[in-house]
Image 1: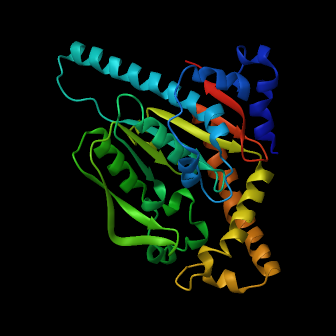
Image 2: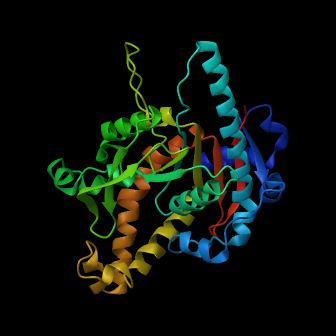
Length: 329
């Protein structure tokens, strides 16, 4: 566990300091679960199994403990923003349509962002109002491998400089502008590259979930006060999935070794060569990738964005959420 993590979560154990120092309120899982009130579970065990990622043990119980309260919380935020939009429209004498509510989800590689995003998407889409909910990941905005190789960034894949940030900003700007059909590029984890000429079309959703390791990334402020937008400027709510560094490392290595017996076995897979090496060699490579790429990215770019999130979910070694922090209003 790093010093930063200790400093942040120490207030969870000292409630008297929360009001005095921290901008967050901290909750135990049992306290958080109580906030679901009468929110109805709309997912089945089979659906949850389909939505979870490899090595993520999320279950019906975990969805009931954590995600139903999240769904109810987000419902209040969406309703409040809709009311604010009506009031502002009246004030400005404006008759336009409300733009999509955008939720950003950030966190390290292998921490469970994808599962959280998919579960949340399904729960939100099943609200009584039946909103249209779409999910986009930042993987599609990675620069193509040919460009990364030209720029010497293949070993920096996943770092901020490996993304087409301008493309991300154009996409989110169009979403918030209410453009009818907005295209996002498609990434293949199988080929480890952008799929040329393939796009997913997003058509004016009520809610958009935007998931990626660096979506809460900030940047140096312009000296002249020029307007340089951040990706998170387009978010109405943001979530950070947190865990102790050693636990994330174990999850990453376990996932890598598991993929050797599944996806990596296909000769067309970018990582096929790892399926033919010895267990010892594969384990050594998994540890190298973690230590030289993913751990560095976590320290330099991902963990520093945690305090910018509205909601932080702290996972324990069993991959289940054990603490929750919610930014004060």
